[in-house]
Image (cartoon, rainbow, N blue to C red):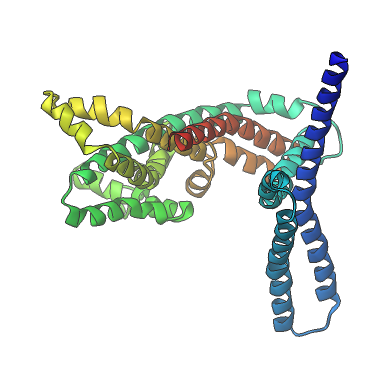
Length: 374
């Protein structure tokens, strides 16, 4: 009898778990599915209608925005009528569903399609298995890309976080009247697009023959000091370092703002206690401030690592990946849109995704730990 009761309670628990999760799945899918159906029907209606464009725009806004809000309202109203246990179980999934649908359609599905395409040849007609992945790990272009991406990771992350930390400390000790101006000037490059920054730095690295007037800032300085002008973007492997300087210039402001906010969160009592105990300013900095803002430093570093792994714009705008400056993302672009080898391009995209996932996971875990701490 006892065993029968246990089996019965166990079966009931399993059935309850299945029922709960099926209900959550149904609630999650309700709004995305109904919204898609309604939007599709409205699209057909607007396509076949002969109404003026302004009328079509108004109807599209009303049906698109107003219809989605109405669905949320109706679904939430229905859930509110359920018992409290089910209401608490299902309410979050009304709002999670659309987000999951978007992630599935715009992230998960393209990933699967890219992986599928990576198993075929350039035209997508012949199955070649892992041949494209063999290219991704053995070709000279990809080996060069891996090497350069490693240089980018070390240089951009190290110097951006280092300079950001230095600027954050200096900003914290600056006269409050000038702190805002100081931070704004340092952060300003971060508001510039990658291509815009590349145009600016192209004038810095611009090269003209020695007999011509030098309009590039760097060569103007070098020749003004009696040196010889150089084609900086052709000097291997230094040209990769010159390119990383652009992103360091852009990312230092971002790192400074985040780190400066963390430094201001260090309790003044803790700093004062350290100084009273006889700690010098370097000791206070390395033994109190750095450990206290460690989580922020890790988060900023991993964010910049993710950004740097996917670097493309600067390389494409400045050198096109030539002269030994190729990176993974630009090699993917080259294979897909210049060589028209979609299989190799898709394989390189998957390799880049696999490289990004561990860093992304670590970043999310750090963020979760910081959130739990608060």
